[in-house]
Image 1 (cartoon, chains in turn brown, yellow):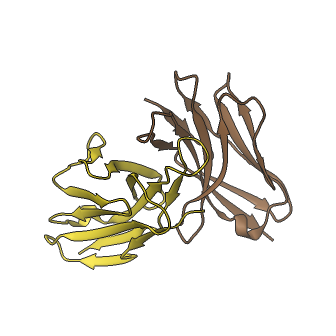
Image 2 (tube, rainbow over the protein chains, first blue to last red):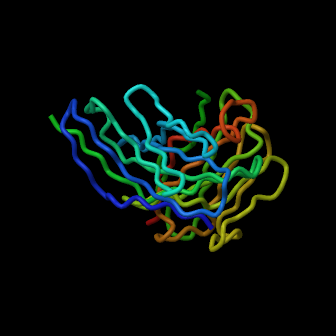
Image 3 (cartoon, each protein chain N blue to C red):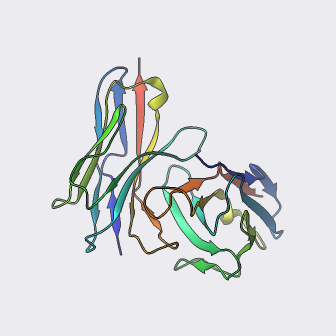
Amino acid sequence: AQTVTQSQPEMSVQEAETVTLSCTYDTSESNYYLFWYKQPPSRQMILVIRQEAYKQQNATENRFSVNFQKAAKSFSLKISDSQLGDTAMYFCAFMKPTGTASKLTFGTGTRLQVTL
Amino acid sequence: GAVVSQHPSRVICKSGTSVKIECRSLDFQATTMFWYRQFPKQSLMLMATSNEGSKATYEQGVEKDKFLINHASLTLSTLTVTSAHPEDSSFYICSARDPWAGGPENEQFFGPGTRLTVL
């Protein structure tokens, strides 16, 4: 079974600064997908960014980028120019592709607080 | 992106009663839906995978007679918590897979969640 570990329960960053959230995972699969989801106080889960394991290039979505280290099984999220609206729980997730039944395995989450 | 709704958003019930939560995909047909449970300040735990027209697949440790899942149409899945007890109080989230969406294995879209409180 796959496991996802987020070792930082809480983090804080000042507005406009950069912060990196860490995630490690354990799997014997060679083909899989990794995700970062954001859960703001509204509790609505929002996809932030995704990475296909077969792609060496790190994914980027505007202010969000990842550092994907496949050999180290590490998948960190970097948030640049942090904004107050980035305050949320952030979950790292793993998915092994098995067709329509592909399931997400979530990490324990990191609570990010963006301050003035 | 695609929209998934849940109803109700909040429900309070007495111990021993049953509660039904609906999950609807509003602008796409979802062949597969997922039900999660989230305790305060914790992660999402997958309870079951719901496939339209067939029985749900439950994760280990989830009582299928306690948490009844029905996926009778391509846009609706329901979770019924039977004979609810205070320990069933939690935040329940559904997600739906759009088979026509791009992305890996068809992206999952999440509902806004339902907060269940059992007195």
